[in-house]
Image (cartoon, rainbow over all chains, first blue to last red; front, side, top):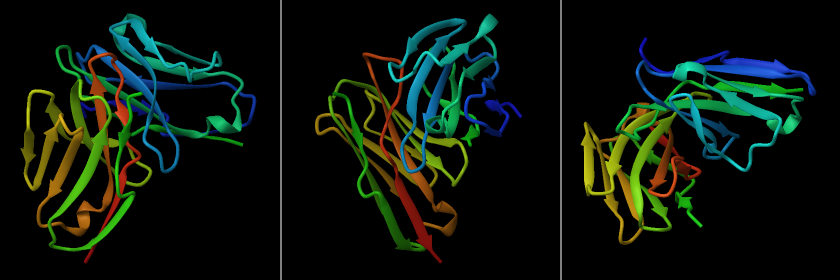
Length: 113
Length: 112
């Protein structure tokens, strides 16, 4: 499959624990985005990478959230000290160089109990 | 403020009907607009991308139009089928940033 791949698909964690999600973009896509979506709403932007550089980060993102894209390939999103309000679907998307057409993965659904 | 609005929030129509979904946006200086489909609990599937210089795009039974001056886009679905039931989301990218700004979606139900 050559689409965007996200792992895990589902994660249940206790409040206060740290979680990490992984996103593998479409091969050779240099743009990578993270979004968060809660039930009944459109996605909210979290952060954007162009190659390995994090060029944009939402002000909504607290300092408990961090994202990396070492070597400009896969990306990880870490949430520290999770809270119930972090429960959401976390979506990753990628775009090729020269285009901003976004292709999304299936998402990681996080439930904080 | 750059915002995207989709009305109605939900729509139910009989199978076979043609239908139109609406998307409106503030600030006409868009870079592009993308329509997506989302099935319950799933990720987003890109349906159509319209660049700011284009007026419409077509793919199969889907046609998306763009009118920047009025801040509107429509997604036309011809000869609707039960398999078209899903939430349809509109997302806009403006020249000033990299992110997509999203509407809340229209939940479409096609009744057999």
